[in-house]
Image (cartoon, rainbow, N blue to C red; front, side, top):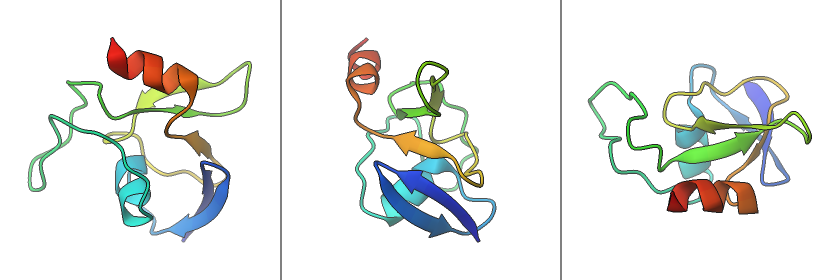
Amino acid sequence: MIDLTINGVPVSVEEGSTLLEAAQFLGFPIPTLCHYEGLTPYGACRLCVVEIGEAPRSKLVTSCTYPAEQGLKVRTASSRVVRARKM
């Protein structure tokens, strides 16, 4: 099991999970367009973007392709994420 924090909530997910799978399993909504079960994720639409890390070194990544990592801090609806999704 991997321990991480999503929107300030400490969670544990199975090893090999993506951030999108972890967030959806826990009920955090992340919009997607190009993610379909059974197909290899490739992050083309960029709609599932989330913010990881701590400021000022945080970065935006596609949650459908980014693996859950031990100790990772994820924000699914920060102002930076919302602006990026609108682009």
